[in-house]
Length: 165
Image (cartoon, rainbow, N blue to C red; front, top):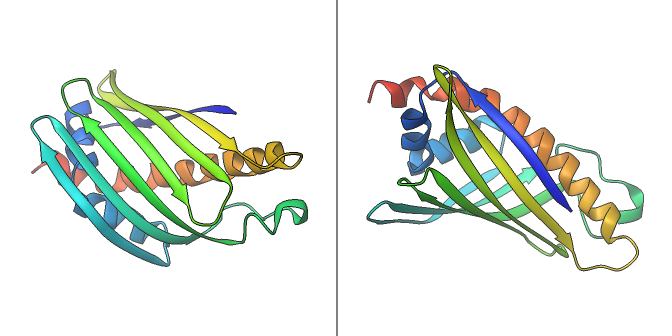
């Protein structure tokens, strides 16, 4: 399943990119999202390429349907890997959900829009389970959409610090 999500911000593209490559920003977003536990696993810089890997334990934003409860509990442990190329303003994203038969990978592109910017995600969500796989993908898509909507408001509140830095 493919999913597109766009976030819009009132800050310039350079401000959002500065934040997206800062480990402290990711940890602040996770805390404000109500993440139960967050751990920075890795942060590397190689020229214009910045990568961040974070492990989080959090609540699903959507109630888990009974038909997929054994594959998706109400609490989720995930590892999130972001690799941002500042030259192209493009991020390659991968999310691994512990003990879940699903794979999430995506591309995010930050573009200028008026006096602000937007970040557009193109996600690929794929479950390896026959029969209920589509239901798992639909659940993940709904939860991811709700999570990124909530995250958009949190990020908007945090970007001021990166605009003045």
